[in-house]
Amino acid sequence: MQYDVIVYGPIFCDLIFTDLPGLPALGTEIFAGDLTVTVGGSAIVAAGLHRLGARVGLAADLGTDAFSGIMRQTLDKLGLDRSLIREHDHPLPQATVGLSFPQDRAFVTHFARPRTPPDLARLLRDHPAKHLHVCSFLAALDNPRAAHIAHAAGVTVSMDPGWDETALRNPQLAGMIREVDFFLPSEMEMRHIAAEDDLLPAAAKVASTMRQDATLVVKQGANGATAFVNGGCDAFHTSVLPVTPVDTTGAGDSFDAGFLYAFVNGLSLDECMRYGAVCGGLSTTGPGGIGALPTLSEVESWLPKLPSSAAAAPTRQD
Image 1 (tube, rainbow, N blue to C red):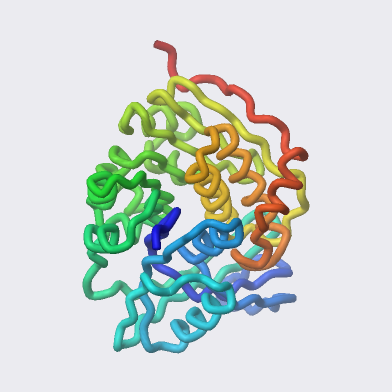
Image 2 (cartoon, rainbow, N blue to C red; image 1 turned 180 degrees about the vertical axis):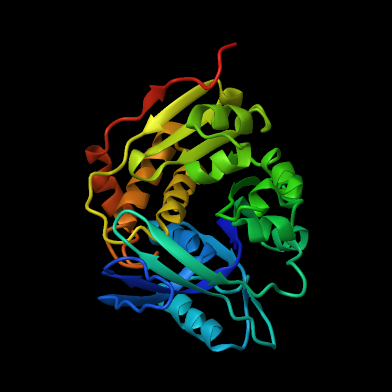
């Protein structure tokens, strides 16, 4: 089987608390109105792509612990291919507790690192794909040559780093950013990488380190998303979908799924951004990262409701 996209990165058992009165203070207790138990991490991107109709492989790890058992059951219910997931004969508890509000969220995560990273060269040789998506700094730092390996196999590659103050400034991560075809950080992540307070100077600094033909796509939450091309000289902005958010968990991963689905199907950058914006927006209308992932027909019905992408101010003048 040839995959459209192989998504590489850890998956987590997500416990998402919603309908909260606020954030808890030390020594106090609050009660959530609702709780959703689901899968997170790279599984959100994979589930989003699968929901759109892409042929997707999920390269991740599961163990013998209870969290892994819940994730197996959930992946099977979603109809996701588990053939690329490594099964370990010991516990590998990977879980996230999310405190989610309509406009933002906070997480506490436990990551159990596998003893060895997957052999990406062998994986791509044995399982041909059009594109490799590296989901999170955890996968990127385990396989810092992932982009080089993918390109050697004739595969395009993207990366979404996720948040970690130390990892975002790791030289190995910076080296990978220089090699990818698409870098998909949030605005906060990009500003932290660049050590800049404002969007345009941060984008200019990050884009200048990337390949000339690479694309930097910055996800800006309620402010939409902006793509920077030609080394950051040109920028294109996509507005946010006009929906009322319930839970923003996984919205960035859902954007990635929509963007990558459009890319592997040969659509333009403008269309990739619009698919990403629609998928990211619709994903916020239900609890958990996978609770409201759209189908392709749903995306196509919402695309006309999204304002057209527009040229934005360039990051620098030549």
